[in-house]
Length: 362
Image (cartoon, rainbow, N blue to C red; front, side, top):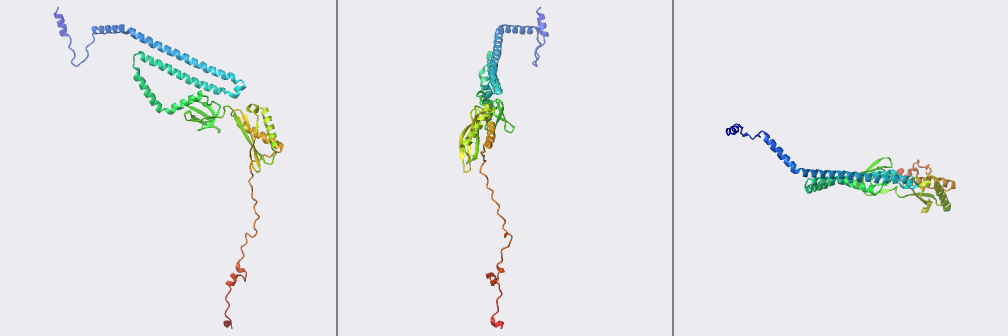
């Protein structure tokens, strides 16, 4: 019996000197399976705990994200319902622009939802990495360095974005407002987080980056002032001029649509200047925002008609004096008389022939 193992060992091939692997035997497979089963048996509780922890973190993050986004959406809808409720009143027609409120609320909601999603999901991702015992210090340091590099490279984009967020939150302007942004002016047709669109007076569209706007002049908030200068002759009766202007203002304030656009009575501020042949009377009125130009044109129209009916002359400045052309000189084409035409002139005497001496004449 002892010769059989010797024979088997003698017939077993020796390892390949070239380093190739030995064929896998049944004993090796059984040993590997036993080791794997023992490893799973020893670590299954740890992996199950980690999996459950990751699952709980993901579920809580998703539920929290849905709840926060839904709360933000309800807040934005409430803002829109408030704007629509006020829109049916007189105050809504004067002070509230529904489209402006809607776009502003949508922009705020979009920013809030994006920030909430980034914070919640980012925190969940870091917690999941910490569950696997991953050292987060190098990762956070690398993210900080990358954020600084990206911030320097895209500083204009970040500036535009932050400026747009604060413009919307502070309600500096909105759709329908007439603004002067320094680099361009016109009516706002769209407000974005990076770019504001303006329509100019000639119909052109300006794309203004929010980061380049250093000052904003909003011509549509609060109220506007309509001012008209009326120039009349210096010999006109001021009492008559004032009474006519007062009548024009009272009539205009009672007619539509000017009774809504005028937020106060038409005031005669008095004489703005007095010249030798004219004087300027200043007329002013407080109007609805953005309606001052229309009120000024209507005031000029009505004042001109009222002055024509009252016999008050309006002058536009000092007339230019026209010089009268002088009559043509009849002697302009006649040549000057010659000095040699007269025989007694010094020139003629100087050129006369010399007379011969008396003795030679004999």
